Length: 347
Ligand code: ASP
Image (cartoon, rainbow, N blue to C red; front, top):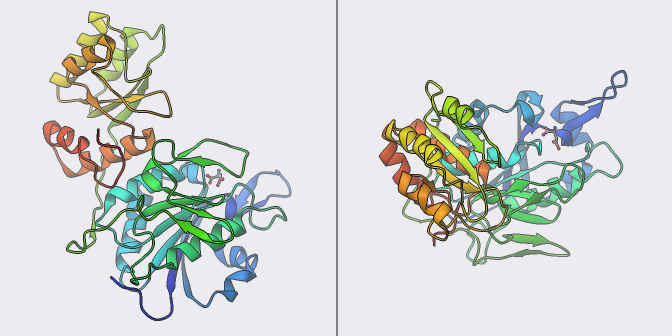
């Protein structure tokens, strides 16, 4: 779809440090209302864009985000999809990568920019990183290619000059302005004097398909991190948790785990009971290759599926989404092997 006329952006404010102020009594950061946030960015008036806003009734710290908020965001974007060229979501940084991952699956066939951003310092502070992040995100959300189509038709995170694919991103720093990384996929755009777009890395939407929103999820899932000395009785208890449908297993290196037959049997039995086990490495960079070592091969033989080079945030939200949509473990396992929104590198 081509962008014509005055560029328009819907700014959705959910909360996070960007819109916080210090409580004088406790010293803790608390959320304030959107109007206050906007007062601190008079520069927004200088855009010759139509910028409308939507604010959540109560702005929240992103540690309080629940999947209901993802469905709410999907509703807001879907209901306003034809009215705007792009969307900017102001969100706390702590769980931004989860929200970006989740909505990248829930907004199937998205062909417009959805840019999540926030800041490490509140927007009212002199050295805030919030203004730059917000202003550049709005510019990216409204940007077009020469043929008039959106420059970045996908769900992204913009932070400290880098535009990253949302479902490839992880928060890696609690102090530095440069807080996000995409270890296994290149940067989609870099903001310097100009914004340089890497069009060959940015998604190409299928023009024949229209936005298909999804509002489903199932959170019966756990992340299990392996470490030397982990006790099998604890693993066994976890795997017998009533209602459990999926486990993201954080393994070593290229997707390796202990070879002990008793441990492998626990996994095999869980898979036989219909629990999906996905292998992801504790290493931040690189790919799970279960055929590389015998220790990985045992997992493959037990029925564990590969998470390839996905992030944890991506695997958790993709599984939640698929479990909400499908009942059969075989069908979910099959979908896990297919990239739905550029979330992993197919070997
Ligand atoms: N705790 C804040 C949040 O995630 C941190 C931030 O926004 O940077 O909402």
